[in-house]
Amino acid sequence: MEINVRNGTPDQGQQSLCETCRWSTVIRGKRMTEKIVECFQLTDGNRRVPFVVAACTDYADRTRLSLREMQEIALILRTTPRTTPAGYTRDED
Image (cartoon, rainbow, N blue to C red; front, side, top):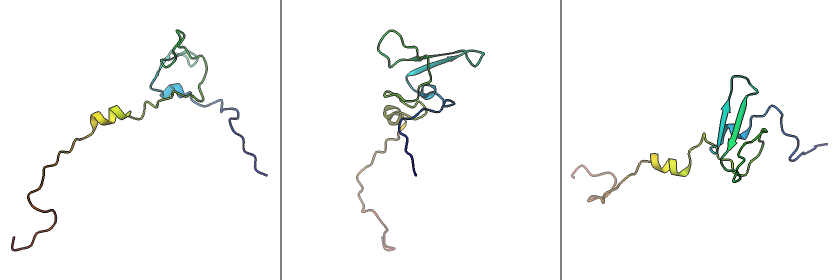
């Protein structure tokens, strides 16, 4: 018998999404328990996140480039109209 569980209990050892989110600031102290996480997508005055985040609707992975960043580093190829046809030429030419 196969059992499928959807939206079950998240893994307790899982890393918070805030660790790699573009909109968060994570401040760590010397001890493992000293950590402050602030989310800049939250609109109210309290931006602190006191728990490990397993899912977020505004998550943006900071390890991947955004569309604007990709456009900034992209090569722009300019072409000129050719006077000769493309392809191989004959020996006589």
